[in-house]
Amino acid sequence: MARLVKLPGPLDPHVHLRDLDWEHKSTFLSETAAALAGGYWAVFDMPNTPPPAIDRPALDRKLESIARQAVCDWGVYFGASQDDNSGEYAAAFDPVCGLKIYNNATTGTLLIDDQTLRARHYAAWPGGKVIAVHAEGETVADILALVRQYRQPTHFCHISTAEEIRLLAAAKAEGLPVSVGVTPHHLFLTEDDVRTLGPLGRMKPELKTHADQQALWDAIAAGVVDVVESDHAPHTLAEKQSDAPPSGVPGLETTLPLMLTAVHERRLSLERVIDLVALNPQRIFGVAPGPETYTLVDLDARYTIARGDLRTACGWSPFEGMPVVGRVREVWIRGVQAFDGEAVRVAPGFGCNLYGRES
Ligand code: DOR
Ligand code: ZN
Image: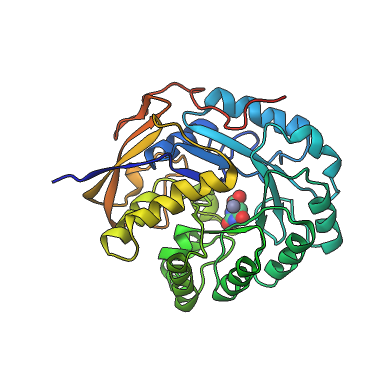
């Protein structure tokens, strides 16, 4: 018997939708359709793919294109750049969901590894909207020093080790305005899986040990983790199977089913999943779905993750072959059925910028 439950506006605040100069990987239309199929009301797009969203012309190009194509609601991040674009912040602030700072090497060209320059960005960001950071290992402590100094609300993306969790739990105990995101790939895969997955198991941060994985689950139970975010980062299969495979894996269509499977296995409660994928990201990023925006999931439906069923343009998943319990049946946005369990029911451009009222 199907047990249908209502999730209030699932929001994934960490995706890389591509498009623009990386249209060959995926488009705003293909990946927002994947978001609906994954049960999401809204997704927030990262600034690292070309042209990086680090000045107003590049941001405007992205805003115009995503507004024309999106089938779910959305936000976009502005990016901090190496050549100090903080002078752009005032002009870029209104239509974006927040600022992203890359403090360790990853896909794209936005790495900032100089602490003085990081501080300049922290000082210049207008405040009142989140700074999301890519910080791994020892860099977490460097960023915490900036949070302590500038008190800007900071979301630590894709935290993946026991040591990083320890630092962030202490930061929370100290009262610093920090939030913590973890990804399904770090929750459900480990470094052992790289042996079988090869480049399809490569992303930044990399997959870690079983002990690190356990620390993430413990931190979910302890309330240290606030958000489960997909870090959806599609690359074509040909690119992943090339001699120089890029880092990144898709995740928009597998995150909710995997988390619902964990509920089925009694690893956490359904209420906690709702916090992690909906209520906490809404609170952290200051957005709220109305009562007519919700997702219906069937807690009992079983299936196996298969590439043929995916809508993401990249057409593969690191979770292929995994049996899951829990299926997205319907997504309603602002009173409109946007996804019916099989097909997208709204036209390109239906999706709204959640930070859309530019003053
Ligand atoms: O593996 C990753 N891929 N990590 C990131 O931080 C960026 C992403 C991408 O854009 O491909
Ligand atoms: Zn990312």
